[in-house]
Length: 264
Image (cartoon, rainbow, N blue to C red; front, side):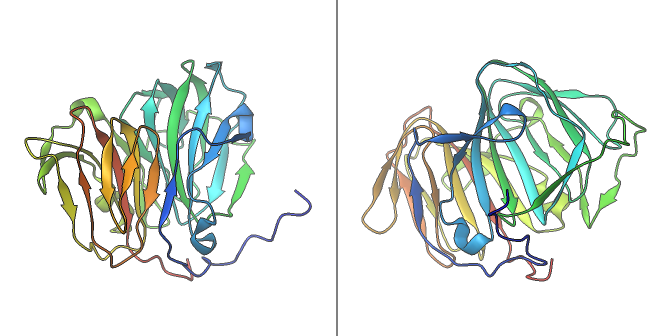
């Protein structure tokens, strides 16, 4: 876009803020016909972008082999399925509801096809980053498990193979995101148990992001806010918060990051 600002050489300065983004906001068309809804208005100074992405019609996706100049990028499937292929990760595979991938910096990949009404949540840093085509690489290519891309390893988290374990007063499906990112990020899906409240003390994180996958709850922060399906929030660093009054079907995608190196 001719009026777009230049890509920063490093990461922009982080500007903390409390954000509450309600479901049903306007979506705009992005790459390969995908629809993007902004989950972090203002981008926290340009440090992070989060999007609720949908593919309404499903079927083959008009995508191409490409990669991103990023410090962090992860994609979580909220509903439906999507078939993807990644550099050095073997044959194409299907991501289903609750599955997650970490896309390390520079890894080539392509979206092949999806179910009707696919929904994913994507989080990237920095907010403004380059996406570049690679027409010389055909995927799938050779399989090289464990390859390191700029200090990170590709991660494919499969929800159906992951047990629920204790997390604070609730349960969570943990991921291997900490190991794959070298400590940059942590991701889990949280659900209530016998208690209807979960408290979160200051995790020492830079980004604290939550997306309501389904159900309802009350976010106990400042004056308090009712949360419904597809709402999302960002909590400023160093602030405690809680979730109360969770419905039995409540599920929360919970993402935290360490402070990213401004020279990344």
